[in-house]
Length: 86
Image (cartoon, rainbow, N blue to C red; front, side):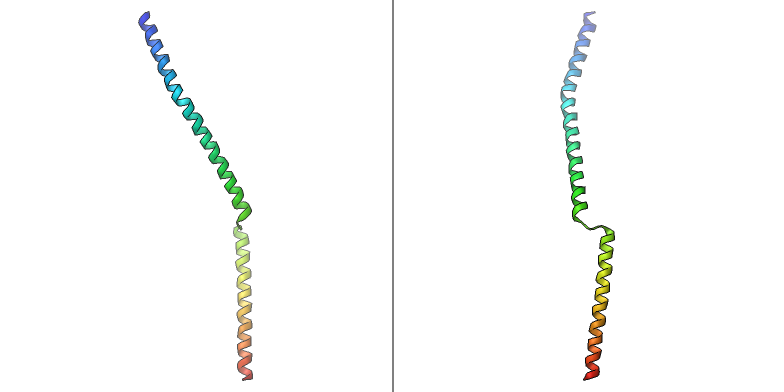
């Protein structure tokens, strides 16, 4: 009976030792995960507030292309007009 009690005490001591290491480790991993999730959420919010969407970018490039086309047509007309008057 004393041998069983001794092994039971050893098992309890071993489990206590493992839990003493594992519990703080698991808590720190959980806190690190929580902090990373918050940072990711903050970053997503920053990107949504700061950067243009694909639709906004497409509209801007379309507008720039139209303006450049109109500008080149105006320059071409001015060059043609100055050649005709010379």
